[in-house]
Length: 206
Length: 352
Ligand code: B12
Image (cartoon, rainbow over all chains, first blue to last red):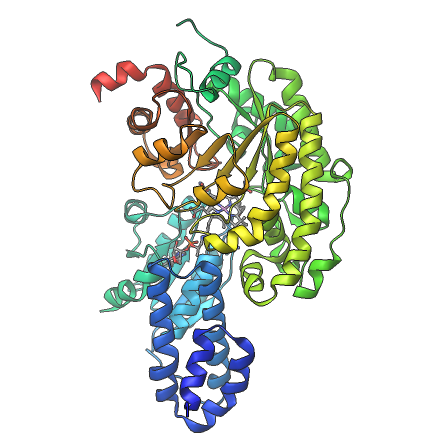
């Protein structure tokens, strides 16, 4: 007979919210958190990232998978500490820009992989980034923009963050950004997409 | 060959004939405000201000198509989506107050006459004004945002994308309603005398949904809009700015006379193949990166344009254009550089 854990994993894999809702309490009863993550959440996340990169998975499917993983994270973190990396990331889309799909994917991935994330949303003012990063003592500030109208403000945030929080790392991303623009803005790193995100972030923190 | 008017140049190019130079369409939208100093909110909401800015920019830059487009929220706003008109950037919906709050709301959308909508009405006035002032010598290209995109403006794209998987039937009811209004909108544009209409199906690429999902959720509906444009006897253009655009599927459902694109087609290995597969009976329009237009020098822009004209410009059927809207806060200098590249192509090619 199929184990509860494998049914749980299958529910996320097939993006079946109803099945997941049914399996979630059962899997939490029968399995410890380590098992849920190593046999449930991580394989699904790794697979989703790979499938996305290989174009076998579309953005809607990736979004839904991540949404379901978030549901799991919310449910389990009510009762227990989820496996953490003890690293705090402040994330947002810079003021003037409302493209937030990419940022949301990044946020859910970070959370899925155990980072603590403060999501400031979209259209975020320079001062909001700085205040949030100071108040949570962020290790990393991730800034997303898909537009060019926002680049001046992006440069401003990066400069201010570096002044106010020595040692903080800034990672940028979004369709309009490339390595050259990121270098020009004096960001510490640039990640092209969800597929390279975790490796780039780990490199930054090493 | 003697100097042609933009209208003549574009028409010959569409027929696959040789012209004095490759036509250029700089897709200048928000950036045109710089020509007259008008604000972003006025650009979206005041037809005189928008038309005047567009005309000035066209004259300054010297490109060959007047692209009548202000922002992607025109249609959604008239369905009742609450809007934000920021001073420093393009208008957008208030995503904290989406009109479609849950899957049950799709069917609550109501159809209306496009000309009676405040923003669509203003947009139609822009078309009339452009047409009246310049339309005989410079073709005016109207615009309509595709049905899935319009729904995305009222639901939030991310939630809409998840609804496609979890509530497909409700989404389809919404698409039917939206499509009816969009068909009326393109007919009204025809009534204002535009030379063509460009349909933007933003999700038809790897930046959007998978190809089969695009066909089921947008292709089927866009076909009705495309038919209405064709029946009016005007030019049907298509725009998509995402990565790996689905030319094959777009051709199947829309079959445009012009493909405006931002990246290589999903099913082509290089641009030579793109030209031979899709550029024989349709015109390709692209694909100068907006990043380059924003950050590059005119010299760099010209070099890229020369490369692209060399790659895609033979035998007509190519219009030089950016990958998407010209960056609203770049200077107009690089738009002019695009036209310069087309004008002095032979000269520059000898040097590059
Ligand atoms: C979908 C889309 C929209 C949707 C956005 C829905 C949403 N809620 O996000 C809608 C229709 C609303 C929209 C609106 C507009 N758009 Co738009 N849009 C796009 C499009 C087609 C795809 C973007 C997308 O969502 N991709 C899918 C996601 C998953 O990918 P992604 O965002 O790239 O994110 C990935 C990476 O970039 C990276 N990443 C992203 N953020 C971050 C952050 C960090 C820290 C890291 C490490 C990595 C990272 O990881 C992500 C996951 O892999 C792009 C074209 C393109 N080629 O990208 C244009 C594009 C972004 N849009 C553009 C424009 C111009 C607009 C409008 C101004 C149009 C208009 N005139 O109305 C408005 C914006 C109004 C405003 N003030 O904000 C231009 C911007 C160019 C510029 N120079 O400014 C683009 C680039 C098109 C182009 N080629 O020119 N758009």
